[in-house]
Image (cartoon, rainbow, N blue to C red; front, side):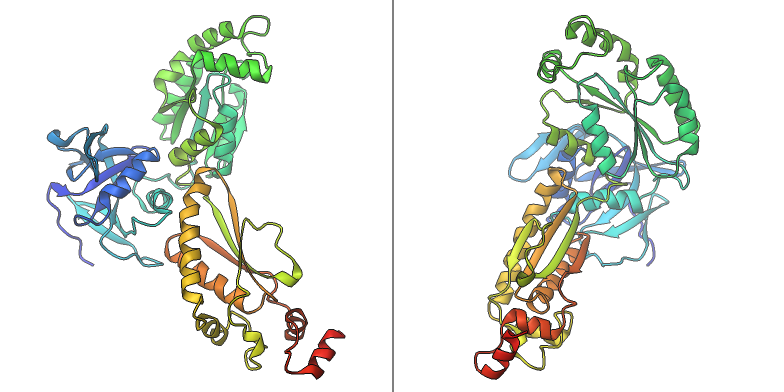
Length: 452
C-alpha cells in the first residue's frame, strides 16, 4: 500500500523500551491509553500521550511530548496523572484500529520522510504486553545488528539479587556468565555468538576494578556494541538482614561486621552506578517481583516467553504427569458410538463437527478460553516458563482432540504461541473401543471386547 503522509504533530500515544519508541495509532476508544498504561506498568517509558511531536534528525525520527502535555498521562476513570516522559527514536508503529493478520505482510508508514514499520495489533489480549515487546524487537527499526550480540552487564551490591537476575535472564534466553575475571572479558565478547549475553561482574570478581570496567563499557559502546549496564541497589538494613538470615559473610567484610563491607562496596561501585542504564532497588521486591521486572525490561527481544502446550489425552491411560490444568470432556457426545466416525480422530472435520454439535460444547469452550486467557498473565508474572493444559476424554482420540484443537486455535488467534500435542491419538480404533466400553445394545461385541 502507498505510504501515508503524517503531519509533524500526530494524534497518537508513544512508549519506549531501551530508548526505542513505539507509536500507538488509532481513533479514541481503540485501546491506546489502556495498552500504554500496561506497558508503563511493565517497565516501559512514556514518550507522549494523546499527541506526539515528530522531528526528523538525520535518518532517525525523534518522538516527544508537546510541552503542555509533557509529564502527563490520561488514565480512564482517574483522569490526568503525572507520569515522566522522555523523547525516543521511533522504531515501530502499531495500528490498533485494524484486525491483525495471523501472518502479516511487511508494511511501512511514511512519518516525516522516514519509513517506519507498521503492524496491525490487538491491544486487548492477555498477552498484549509480551506481544508488543516481541513486535518491537523483531519488527522495529534499530534492533540488534546481525552478528553483534547484545551485552548486558549486571553489577551492584552483594545481596541485592544478582543471582536472581542472572537466573531470570538465562530463562529469558541470554547466555549467562557469572563472576568472569575482567582479563577474560574481551575474549568472551569476541568469541560469543549473536545470542544475547549477560555478564555478572561485581566485587567478588578477581582483580575487579570498577573504573576499569566503566572505561571498558564506554569503549565498547563507542565501537558500536550494544552494551547495557544494570546496577542492583538495596537499603543497608535490608542487606544486613539478608546476610544475617543466610549466614553468609559479606565478600568485603570477611572478618568485620557486614555493615562495614556494605559501605566499602558502595564506595567501590559508585562509578558504575552513575554510568548504569538502569538502577533497580530491590529493597521492597520479592524474588518473583524482581524476576518480573527483569523479564519486562530485558526479556522482550530474546525471551521465548511462556511456552504453552495443549495436550489431548485419554483418562484410561492416566493423567499426564506434566499437566498444570486439566479439563474433562467426557460429558460431550461421544463420536465413538457412531460407527462411521469411530475409525477417525478429532483431527478429522467430521468428528470435530460431531463434537461441536453438542449443546454444551460452545459454552464450555468459551469458558475454558476465558479462564485460560485470564490466567496466562499471572503465570508470566510469576516467571513460569512452561504451562501444560490437558484436555481429556475416555480414549483420547475424539472429543479431547477436537476440543484441544479448537482451544489452541483460539489462543493462537489471540497472539499466544501454542504447541499442540495429542498423547493418545495413535491408539487403534479397536483399542479405543476397549477403553470406552462396548455398546450396551450389542452384548455379543461387549463380551468379545471385554475378553481382549
